[in-house]
Image 1 (spheres, rainbow, N blue to C red):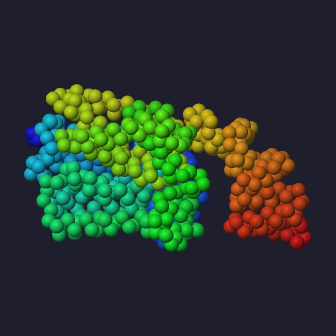
Image 2: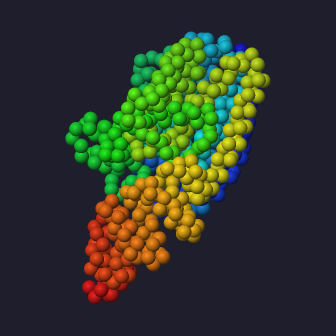
Image 3: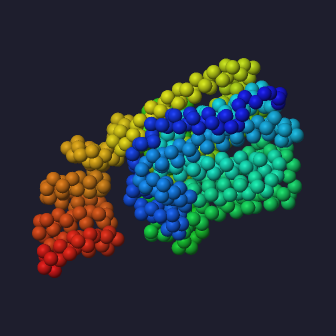
Length: 560
């Protein structure tokens, strides 16, 4: 590649990313806890002390995330500012790692690292690599699809895992350019930490192998060197399966797949298959989940190109057959994209790498059967490949006119920044988030339930009743809604209506311990002490800790 004056020193690139990142996320720093945030922060006593054994028991497969939450709590208790600042900082650092990754990649394809044994791309792109790296980092930083992984505090699991993923890859490339014990040690450390952060890091060794095959084939490596380099990295693949089999009944169900029975499985293949699902077969089969993901991936690509109508809770239709028109079209589109990636491999490896990166990094959450088909945060790490693809494509179009290239991409980045800033207003609090979801998923019961819960917290009880009634209308077997509505009836003194809702909730979900506790309170108020005692015992048998003062009062009033 023709040697050019550097576009931007590394320190200034980092400074620019920090400034822009904190500006476009500045309206989130006081956004309240939403979705699962209260469960992992305000309702989670394990983060209130930096006790590593306790954090291990509570977070297990995402141990590193638990440690960061504990540090946040130690510094600012439940003040949301510190949590949001941490998430934004991680996002900015990820953008900087994208910058370094692209710069290193251009060093490889430019011949400095491979002795010239690389594709012709080095001759077709005359733009300063640091400019392309900076523009790629800006696209990654500003895209509005990243908001869910940054503004939603609990989803730091995704951004933090991506930090270790990208950091490990950068240090791996540096090690391959010029072997250094320090670089390799950092590569291995980041890999291990990533494996204890989120399951998406399982594909990291494969990403390294992909990079090796596309960009680093020209760097000689002896057999013994290859063994010493790769054996420790491949051994890290055992970490995630091991952590998933170490979960116990005290581990928060939110933080892990529901597979505590895995250690008791005698059939190895059955154990593996159970490990790679986070929802029961009775709710969705793996076949239907994977078929639906074909459509989801097409939706992700559409959102990447045109990020409008974003939603925290998409009402996504389940695919039943590959031959369904939408599913078949999605399959053909994705298959064509993969074939195109192979076709581009020789002369346009950057485009090819961007395509393969997208499919590789989205694979874990597209193959592990889950209750939810689509979440925007699942596109966070794949956005690295998509951003690189876009910058590379535009650079090929304007390879003889860097000024036009820069203007086009800066225009896209400016629009993305505005959309991101605007989208973050939706994450202001629970009501704004779920009110937005209601308008975009009006036929989904859960969005009404969640907005109803937010209305209760705002003291708007009558409006909350309307949302809960709508949720039941859309989903008559929604046990949580009956429980919530029963609780509201209890507060209003409508005990008979409350009993009807609690009875319905217990009928749908017999192991719903909170229902028995609340129903016991109503029976106590109605002086039906025998029924009250039955519900107290039932709640206790399900692990619910009934208020000791309530039990003492029950004993006294019922003369037990």
